[in-house]
Amino acid sequence: MTKILSFNGEKFVFNPDMTILENLESHGIAVEYQCRQGYCGACRRRVTLGKVNYIIKPLVYLKNDEILICCSTIENDLTLL
Amino acid sequence: MAYTTFSKLNNDATKEPMFFGKPVNVARFDVQKFEVFEKLIEKQLSFFWRPEEIDVSRDRIDFINLPDHERHIFISNLKYQTLLDSIQGRSPNMALLPIVSLPELETWIETWSFSETIHSRSYTHILRNLYTDPSEVFEDIVLNQEIQKRASDIASYYDDLIHAVQYFQLHGLDQKEIPYINITGEQEDLTLRIMKKKLYMCICSVNALEAIRFYVSFACSFAFAERDLLEGNAKIIKLIARDEALHLNSTQQILNLWAEGKDDPEMAEIAVECHAQGKELFLRVAEQEKNWAKYLFKNGSMIGLNEDILCQYVEFISNQRMQAIGYEATFDVKTNPIPWINHWLTSDNVQVAPQEVEISSYLVGQINSKIDTEDLGNFKL
Ligand code: FES
Ligand SMILES: [Fe+2]
Ligand SMILES: [Fe+2]
Image (cartoon, rainbow over all chains, first blue to last red; front, side, top):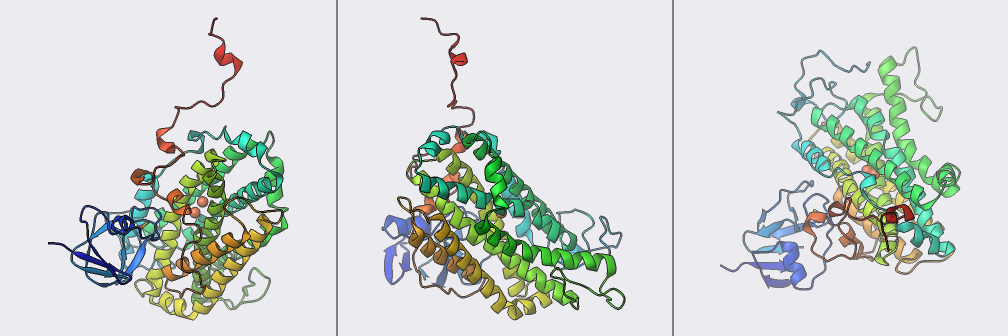
């Protein structure tokens, strides 16, 4: 089943073989990142809808609606701020 | 309350606050209140590196060929980094170990400080290669006005806390006979809450140091390497930056755990009470870093980086860091003015962008940039 990633009003079909960050980059969208390993927090984003699955467990303090996009994929349709 | 290295009080550390609870006794990690500190320790240990593993010998030529104003930028930046790590190599231990109450946090603080001592040693490694006698550079760190301005601001929050805690350990908090004269020479009513406020401001200051000040200096180091200059130095700074990401993460954890009421309830109140003061601190750091940028580029800018861009980066990174601890972003900058810095801050293991500079961990002992006539002694024609 295809899942949809919404970011800044744009919608993309999500490629499950890549992280959210890589998905965005593959569409030419430059977003902040640093470590790409879940420990620096630079890729922290707010989610308004949906859930993520982590490939690497985040080491960063996250508030309820915050996720790290460098080490996660989406579980269902997801809207990011 | 006197410090004891091993309290005989039966103690369940999982019920203690991070700081100012019962002293830690058994260093046990089977049960933990905040597992994240143990995870940070593991990560930091897995990052272990030694300056000597990185070949910096090729930097010398680059350095000699730099125009004067760029040499000023490079060396001033290195002096500033040396100052910051001199402070960090001792202060978390001095200030925080006497008051920490969780074994996993205590060990994290020690692991953190230890990694700072590696950073300090690496500056000597870099400078020894650039100068026959690096004394002049080191000596200037305590003479240079521009560096001193920052040094006293950073040290003051640590010193203020350390001083109050030392009084508290010797005399307790009953000030009837011996009044508390604080570090600036004024009498102060010392209470537990006041010490906690000093702790809050100290952690904010450390966070600003590692999360803002250091990143400004990283930008300068990597700007040279973007032009294929001083790449040995950049390899070392890359390793330092990887460590610093963990350090600043840990102080963000502490500040957020307090603010969200997950630790000491009194610290949650203090986080609200000191919010304005904390914000002021971050803004002052941003201001100081902009002044520093002015000093760096006073004789001219370098390709890829100038005062203006560096100041925008100060604002950008300050916004990010303030938001990470629940403060509002104050500056207008929305996007990173130097996006190229990010590939320098990426962990080696997941290299996505191909890089001109070799990955240092694969290079150990493979390159010998210095060849003397002696090495050629066995060659016959
Ligand atoms: S890029 Fe560092 S946590 Fe995602
Ligand atoms: Fe450091
Ligand atoms: Fe550090």
